[in-house]
Image (cartoon, rainbow, N blue to C red; front, top):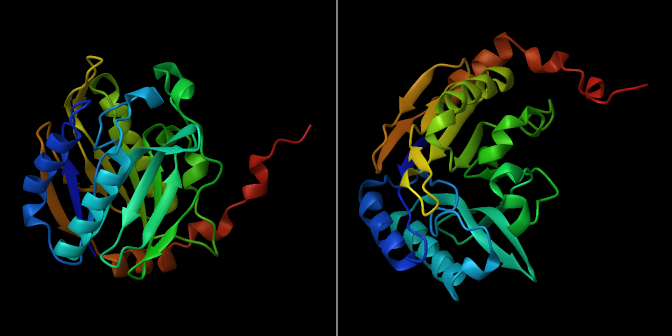
Length: 258
């Protein structure tokens, strides 16, 4: 399985320019790879439905479909989506056949105002894409380990976080990604944006792929760009069979009893 991480620096109100910049970065993506983009990669961080330009959603969908079909790969990241009168921070994956895989962010970053503009998703999802099982989560979800927990009869191969994770807390980002990989015996992908947004927040990239034992197999710097890595899922399954820790989990203990 080949995974490509793509870091970009989207600008609010500049959808066409943002997608054009991504075109250049995607030029070297491999056929059949999984290309993961950051949180709100198309618009930068929006806090109000009024900030979402007319046609932004459909333009982004059309662009993702074209990229997936022409490059013969899976492309995924989070975008702001209006559903009725509610806005969702939605992770969207599209394969070359046009199939869509959707997860709405369940943990909104209330300290940053996200709860005022967005509606929270109601369920965790995972998808089988080209025989690989992927569980997508978004940014602040990383701080809540229970949404990443493996269920013995519904295990995943790759846990992926699309993020806008700022510089002051980047060491926490790195440590939490490693922790999620170790406790779930899975590959963990964290893809973060770079640059400075319209609120003045600085994002240092530091997108990573961590293997099932907690070792970093790829890490990016603070610049826009793309990196690709082939991961060994067979080795991961051998490790799980040798050390079947997940079979000893007691999920009922998560519920407090008085």
